[in-house]
Image 1 (cartoon, rainbow, N blue to C red):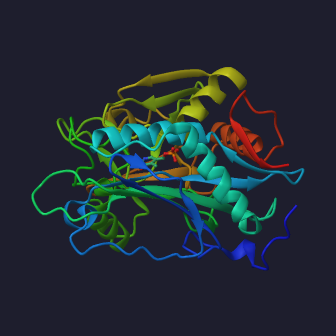
Image 2 (cartoon, rainbow, N blue to C red; image 1 turned 60 degrees about the vertical axis):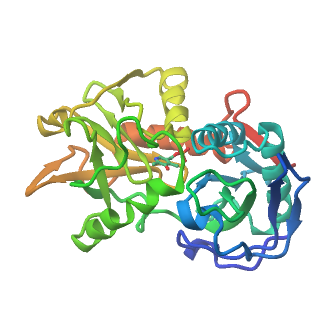
Length: 345
Ligand SMILES: *Cc1c(COP(=O)(O)O)cnc(C)c1O
């Protein structure tokens, strides 16, 4: 095992820290080159690059963990590779082949292995693969040349305070149009959410809860995490919509609920009225960064709707799902086949 860097792992926030190596591959004349692991953290591109003019970019996010028995692993990277393929196709960008994609993640994490936080520190190594149009584009069209990069950075919890329930509010802004790009991980989905998130923070809320733009009656998701609910009779209720980003964490939680915990799972349209009527016992946000973050209150234009599990701690069912998911990721529990990609024994 590679010795760890000398960092105060426990006090890391969710921020960028430059690590040793990053993967870089360029697409030119219709083909991806071999790719390299580089020391250079800076990107140099033309002033008229497609990404700078028309935001042609997409990204992924996953984590590497040190397991209880000292292995370095990452969680379902093939799912991220597939999702980035879908993002690229929607954005007229060239696909980086799925098998090479997973191998590049493995190679990058191996090169930055000293930066994978130790088991039990509460921190993980965040892996950020991303792609952008790199050659000059001035008429509106896709770029001809692209760069695919993978950077890593050690991170602590996404929400300050870790497992403390958060307060979210119904947003007056929309996240994704009904037939837009909500289902792909495009940078542009985030650019237009920045004003909404800053406004939420200025008003004392942790996040925005977006409703469907067409009817403003159904729950979609927050800016960067899917939403899940638990009913008093212990059914997991998962909002379904073609404009929700297909979270890998959420799909893993659905599998865990059904196949490991034997719960009933209901994936369907969820109306905000159901929250108002108090039909849910627990609510949480889920994603690679958020893991499962409990929601204690949802604020809607002057009215606060309390989630019965309260503001003190995560409810019992979300806690069970959290313990099972993180148990699998950290090697304490046996993983379903294909979920754990071992990077170093
Ligand atoms: C990345 C992302 C998520 C979480 O997806 P995971 O695969 O679980 O990390 C949820 N919502 C949005 C909008 C996202 O961009």
